[in-house]
Amino acid sequence: MLHETHHQESQSHWAGPQHQRPRTGAEILSNLTKWYGEGRPLLTKDALRNVQKQLRSPLQGVDKVWTIGFDGAKVEWEAWGKPYGVPEEEEAAYCSMTVSYLLGLKDMVTKVPVVYPSYTVDESRAVLQQSIRTWEESETWSHLKKTLIPILSRHHVNKIVGFSCFSLSWPQEESEDIRSGIQHALLLTVRSLLERTTAEHNVPCYVQDPAYNDVDKEVLQEQGMQFVNDPQGFLEVDESSVVFSCASNIAVKEIVTELARPAVIIWDKVEERKIETGDELGDDFYPSTDPATPRVFDMLSNSYDTYTFLPDTNFGNMAVYVRK
Ligand SMILES: C[S@@+](CC[C@H](N)C(=O)[O-])C[C@H]1O[C@@H](n2cnc3c(N)ncnc32)[C@H](O)[C@@H]1O
Image 1 (cartoon, rainbow, N blue to C red):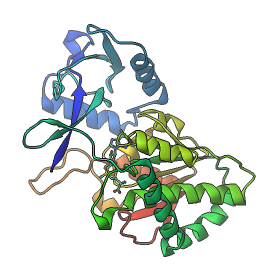
Image 2: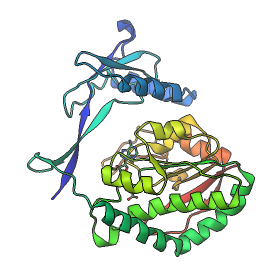
Image 3: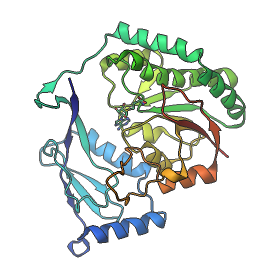
Image 4: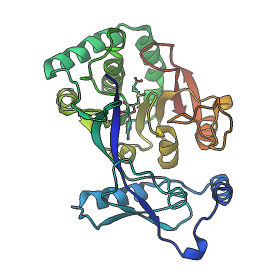
């Protein structure tokens, strides 16, 4: 059965002075390009904390959640928008974050809500244990370990943040069964390596993925991993972090680039020929959900050394980036 995710997405209302309201697509694109080129921040930790704080208070039907757009003007989001509501293009044109809430899954054909399929806690635990064994014996881990040992002795690292590793409890095709497990195993083995080779003990390991269910949370917690909701994972990322992300459905690379310069980053390899600027044309262009943007490319090429991550079917085409 094919499923689609079902979000509650708010309607947006641009709340700046009316005479400055964005009018046409061309004007919007030209402003966005100009401000991005000037280095104006798309996101800050304070902006994320502001929305997080508003969403933590009990919301009434009439409440609006506000953010500040790239143009500096306020945009208000209806707290309870229509399911699948699409933000008004011009209203939200300068917004670098939309406010949405994952309601669940629907059948793609019938649109009837479906219950998430899930392994039990025992089955998910077994997936993770099998994944850890497979990962620890792999060439990929052996190579990554050799890369990281000298780096961890020269960089202060005291935190691991993993994005988008997917659910351990989601029943998979046999060949895919341990892909999520292997990505979590990477986080756990990097943490053990850090604890063995440095003075750091009880290194926190945060994981952010809306796909986690209660079974995942229990199994991850047994391993001492801390599940966090978006945007807490991004707020955790700092100069002393190892960040991991593979094939994310959100713009992890751009968001991290906006917020911090982590000591070590392991994510999809960024290549100059694959930079996405947002104004690509052509029917054959397929935008990435986690694009290598000009800012991501600049950060990695100016401030990071690149190391090889061996090809491995449990990951995409990855690379290890270490701050210079
Ligand atoms: C294409 S899957 C990749 C999963 C896994 N990393 C892999 O390589 O198979 C994209 C992942 O991004 C996750 N994702 C979506 N929104 C996210 C968010 N706000 N924060 C973190 N992860 C998110 C999805 O739940 C999903 O697990």
